[in-house]
Length: 170
Image (cartoon, rainbow, N blue to C red; front, side):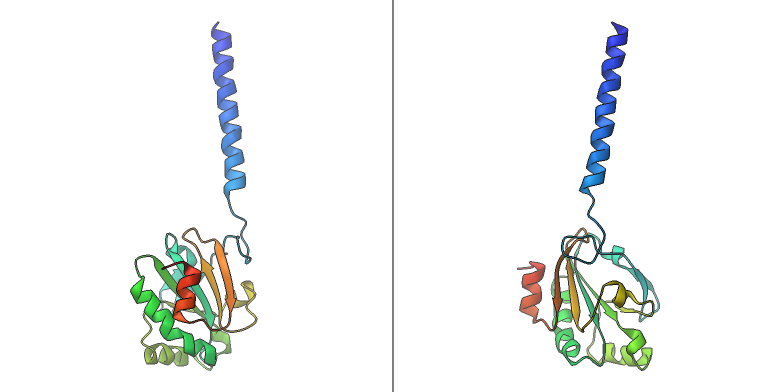
């Protein structure tokens, strides 16, 4: 009787362990740069010199924007991004990754941020994160859900309303 009881417990444990492993294997999103994939994490310095990573925004929707100061469409959408950040700060993180290696200087990026009164983090990309995300044109924006999964990729300028719709903030 004891042998049957122990065999039953072992069988239940084995089935549970197998089920847990299957759940862990198939519930994780594949890391990549396509819609439906987990956005690759990265860590860069901000204009203020602090380290910031994509993981810092977990739990919030993320507007991940790749831009440059010389990009006219980028300049056009920055005020809308700032408004979004202020309006939805409790559930949205705006993360702006500057293509710093294509800028004249970091001072130019800082002056740009000051001119537009930008309060969201501006990350200085000297590592090539732009290339890791296959950014070919500016601005390029990735919309991530609260778990860091890519929901949308948009190349070109967006209005505040378009950003709100893509982020499903209404």
